[in-house]
Amino acid sequence: MERREYVKAGATMAAAVILSAGLGGCINIAAPDEPIVIELNVNIRQEVIYRLAEDAANTIEENADIF
Image (cartoon, rainbow, N blue to C red):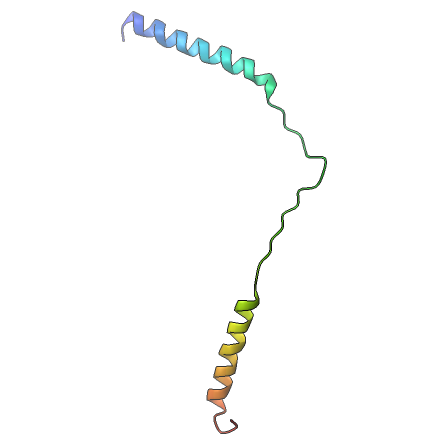
């Protein structure tokens, strides 16, 4: 690298350091006053019906003389 490129790279790094130092005081991390609520509305009815239907089909096949 030539001397100009080193100077340009150094100036860019210096500018980045100055800008990042200025932003250091702006970032605050704090816990919220109210609890975080996550609502999960999950529909498991379909799976339960499927399992019951499968069990019923197996029972009918195993006990064909009853039905």
